[in-house]
Amino acid sequence: MPKKVSKVKKISKIKQLKKDLNLPDYAIDFNADINGTCLVGHLDTNYKQLKKLFGEPEESDGCKVSGEWVFKDRTSKDVFTVYDWKQTDLYDTGYPSVDEFRDSDSNYAFSVGGHNSKKMEAEKFIAWMKTQLDKRF
Image (cartoon, rainbow, N blue to C red):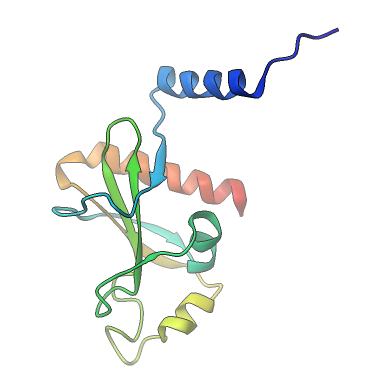
């Protein structure tokens, strides 16, 4: 009879494997300090997919951005944001309304923010995001 491994031990082994392979482990953290972040890349997806994976975004400036998700690497504490920069009528009346944008199945280039000096970490974050989306959609 095969030896049973407890769920706690499995989770612990997965966390250790991630550490050994130096894989990032991000979590939503709306309390993270986003000061000093700027555009570091883009992510092609739609609002519905992001909402299904990560929940409601935090409201943003209401001018150029209608909402954003804030992520923090649990190990390195690097902070990244995903937001809809200038995609809605908050910025330009010729663009879709916030509701139309959020109801659309079309992909848009969501902006990814991070600290400019951490370009390699930003690339890892974007790759992680793409993996999460590919696994689910």
